[in-house]
Amino acid sequence: MNGQEAIKRRERNLEFFRRFMPDLHRLVSRHSPSSQLIVTDTGEPDIQTPGGLVYQGRLGEVVAGQLQRFWRAPKRFLIPPLKPGQFDKMTNQFLDGLLKRAAAEKIEFADAPTTPESYFLAIFGIGLGLHIDELVEKTDCRSPSPMWPETRPVPAVRAKGSRNATASANRKFPGPLRTVLI
Image (cartoon, rainbow, N blue to C red; front, side, top):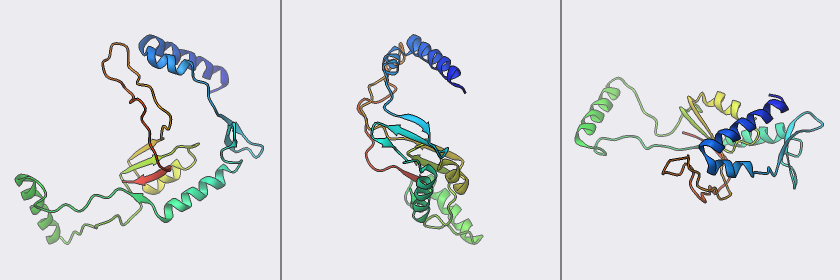
């Protein structure tokens, strides 16, 4: 998309918001970015902020280091192994039968992950996205979820005519950026 197409798309989006989500339109139309995407002399993208370049012109090197540290000790959400007696009567009977059948077939369940593969992948912190392809490929995930923390207060935004806010007011997500395999 070139600059003219981006300007036209922004105007179309703003018109949509003006008509159907006036609260969001007021918020977005007044937004003034505090950073800018640039291409450095070396040809790498970087983010220019009032304080300088986020990646110091070393995006590839910074991301490679982040990925290397992550793969040494990936963070995972673990669900303890299921055991009969934890659920209602019908579920316990089903689970008991399933586990007995698995044992008879010599199928074992690990208490912790044994491979880097993961069905879900939650990526906290998007940056310029250079890390996402490797994470998706190495985990062979089926449900990647890039997320980013919003550290500034977010006003509640409502669609015209709706009673429920679509964004929580003053929500904050503390802590370092990280990737989690589920």
